[in-house]
Length: 402
Ligand code: ASP
Image (tube, rainbow, N blue to C red; front, side, top):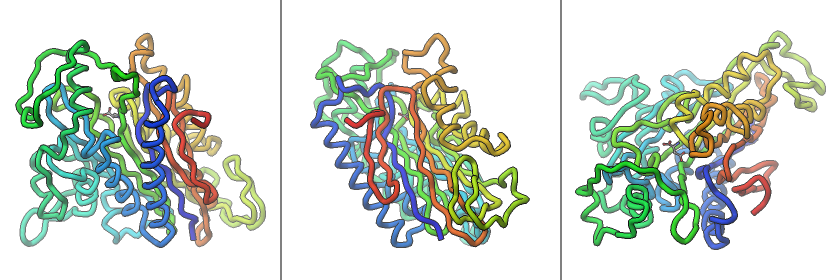
């Protein structure tokens, strides 16, 4: 009944032409195009939104270009602490379906799982204590060793620390701790032993002038049945404090999904061309429901301070039916928006920088078809994003083509 839609992001930040040479752009383009195509094919052949979004993010967690899974950045203590989240909503939720019981989960402080997003998915779907012991919970945020201890029993792959070591991230880590340092560890064995108490900002540019990815990833999908899913995964910020929890696993900050009644829901049976939230829906019925899902990337502490993801969705829900999701995302993550304003005089230091992607379901009357309007905005140099609109693939990093 619904035309599938999807959008992926691969991080936002201080990305400029001067630090993004063509060969690096080409790598991102190839990766994003591959994951976009695969996921679009899955959606078009009947894969539910939850599984499609997890598929896209799992692929990015294996790609060291992105700051998640294998390509995760290091904490200031030289450890890896990954975070991920998943959230679903639906125009027509089947409340017997486990994914709609809990709706959203964040996992954090992960050091071993190859695909943090798959652990988040299991935490979403497992919500009851089973006869054989603890098999799940209704908790919405789960941290560290305890939850990671279930990974293998739940079929989620666990890797040795070496899997997560990439020289590029290690060098970023060292450069951030001591900006003049050019030293590198002789082997990955120093990964867990490395400790340095110094603090320090970090440069977003390598010595070669290339952009250093902040690189959190996210995917928002609409499937054929009107289900929306959002999946997000990150290693966090380079040289974050150990134990720091960011926006990515925090409901309402780095991700959100919800369905709500349209404010003018009494009119559910208009059968001709109608105007709905600024869109003319040709031959559609106006539905009673509206559904949105968003994923953020950028300075997570700012996303937390502004509850960025839910703020954008709540603007639609409570505004009386005037705004589109595109308007709301721009008001939060666009130039001069809420995230930028939250940085105040610190704007320019990285604080407040970021972007949001999302999908708003349009024309979703009970029993009628609908489609997903893809939206995004960002307030910084660039945001890696790839989406399908009217069956045309788009891959961009800046506002204008590369
Ligand atoms: N939002 C992530 C964090 O602060 C980082 C990013 O999106 O680049 O952990």
